[in-house]
Length: 112
Length: 118
Image (cartoon, rainbow over all chains, first blue to last red; front, side, top):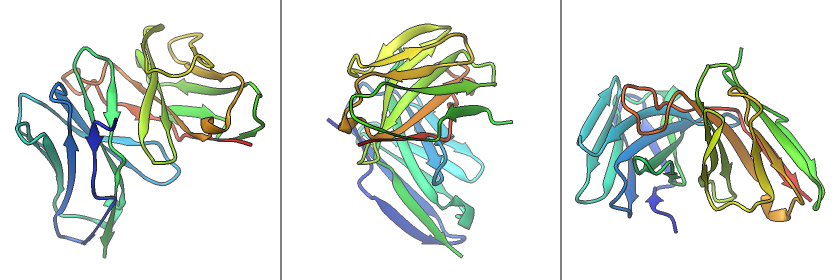
């Protein structure tokens, strides 16, 4: 039962443009969400997170938006750079539950 | 000086064998984790240790057992390996649990151990 879904396995954008990575979840109890970035042959790297009490969190070029009613979150990267090319994982957790669910990842390719 | 290290990086073994994967973190973190990335690329949490105490066991078979000799190490022992155990196993650490505010929740991952059971 995949409670966190990333329906786009891949995304390709031009350098300088916006990259939008999407994530949907089914469990309304999730109240904390994270995005990780992963390069080949390396472990995931934490990018940005958001609590369910917020609908937006920004860190430099990265912004995460949360739509609780739609059970949807998205990661915006502006402007996209070739070094952003990686697999991006969305994750969700329930505070106090010590559990974390990951999506299957979206491979982002930023073309120069 | 790698923050989270795992050994070995690759592990090829026969069905039925017992093997261990080691993990060490030099970040002074209180919490360590083991994840399994299956063939569909889903990352699933297996265990986490907080201050040497197991606080999660994500319905993994009891053939898998985490061992934490100290706060900096969380080793994964696997008994009677099966074909379905083939996967990439990631170790991670964080100062505190994932949802803690103040930026403490960042998990630092190791490079992964690619296990192939033949």
